[in-house]
Length: 144
Image (cartoon, rainbow, N blue to C red):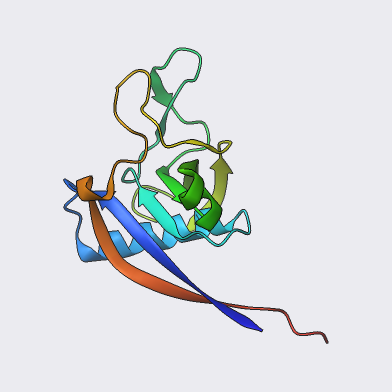
């Protein structure tokens, strides 16, 4: 049996990346979210490829030992309803090679405002740029 999953992709409104870069970021973001075997309904691509991360103890940015990645948040239908999300890093081969390598995921958390910046983790859709919806078909494995 097949299931179709429609996903909305969001970028910061200020993001002006070329169409090919957007396509690569979308592909990496979807693979990152799917690494948890979830069917995301919305993915907010928060960054371009970078190799730094925020140290949870100091709040300072430092070199990420895992390397180049994209920071994103995603939601499945239940998280859309609860106004929560999962923040993830989608690691890739390099700054110019966005082929998926692995993913890390934070625990689910509220979309509420960040303590340090005062900005929402997942801004209102009016503050985001919507990439065209993309549908995915998931096929169940056939016995054999």
